[in-house]
Length: 123
Image (cartoon, rainbow, N blue to C red; front, side, top):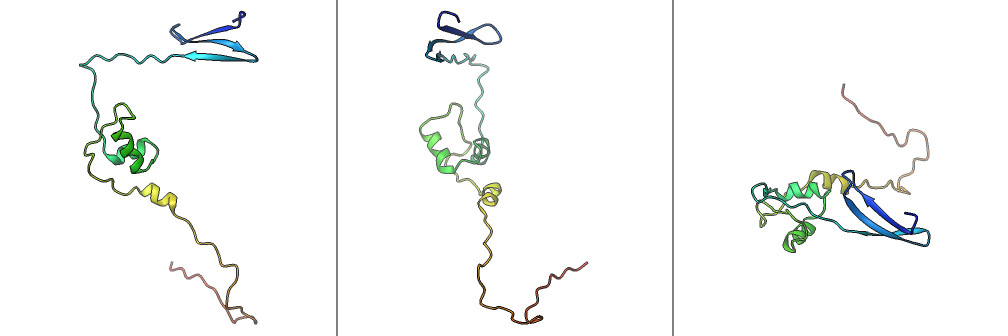
């Protein structure tokens, strides 16, 4: 590290990155090695659109369909790719809003007792 170079190792002492010092920072060259899988261990897991929707933190169905069509995600397989997704209660609730209170009203009470508001509660 004293010669302007840096090497980073994982917990198993495998080299995962090297870098060189550029002014006050280190510019890292990181290479990612994907683990090899034995063919007998590889398993294709099929999820529904709703499962993938939740896995990807409620991304829209069009985004999921684009990911599938362009093979953007490894292991992204859908049970029935042609069937549409049902509605998501969490998404519906998140999109709900409350109407704001009126700034002005057409009916103003001028004297006490002209306008009465009550809450009725049956116990």
